[in-house]
Length: 393
Ligand code: PMP
Ligand code: GLN
Image (cartoon, rainbow, N blue to C red; front, side):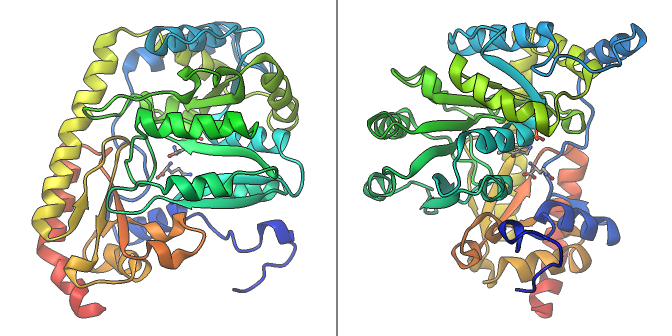
């Protein structure tokens, strides 16, 4: 791999994110973008109205670094309402510039150079970069398709005196796996035994289909060793607002606020007012959100199956992965680089989510956070044009 000048050794090889790359290709070829995970529809008007009202009321300057008090209160109420978890908004809830900054600032605050961070592989791409920026090393535990279970013994062997943090992501991007209560109990027991902190990325907490989302912080002994991270981007279809948050015990919160104040300090004051309103919306919103996505998931999965892919049905998130081997392909990067031009659809090659890309090269991720018409068009193009791609590879 070529070395970029100026870039620190820690970040060599990270290049451009796969999401930016595939969206650029989609735009270039006017393709239906089922790659990058952003909704192509608007978030609720009442949330936007609350942010506009805040702007017009003059809430346009820096806010407290930990976030505006009403949003921290709303986040604490949300954790109580959905999970019966109690957090003190003053000292245990922090607002960040999206989940991405919450993850990076947490790892920067918690890891010493040389510490190990356990990641389940495949992993959301920013984890590995944040681990690298913190000077720590990743230790990966494979989630093996088709059911994406991990090997309990391997996890037991991989956690030891050097492990500082275990990163959990449930519901899981890109696989759509929702960790079971039994799996979470196993992970929790190991983290307690080895005094490891858990960074739990729950940005898809409201997107589970027929299975329960169990925040690991609800398990006995876990509240004070867990940093629970979420974001308004997914739940309220407002990915561009970049309002995320973390709930953690008092001491961990004090640590992660220390790095946060020097990474971004604060973000999006009027948007924070909007999200304070959003988190207090009634059950009809959260129930409707889930059921609308269930319909989208079923539509995309049925369409991909009809095209001939082996679909690994997701239990959560707004992504569906397919095994491309049944269609006669064996390299996800080649397929995804040709897909926009030859088929008119963009998707994400899963190998971008693996330490060793060879382990994920038979998988491709499609996003279903799209309107019906766009999903229908994407499926129709795949059905009609996938033959062109077979000829091109
Ligand atoms: N974690 C996961 C698992 C994600 O899929 C994403 C992408 N939305 C993020 C974190 C980043 O969230 P945000 O846009 O709030 O930074
Ligand atoms: N989370 C989004 C995804 O997985 C991408 C966010 C980004 O582009 N950084 O597709």
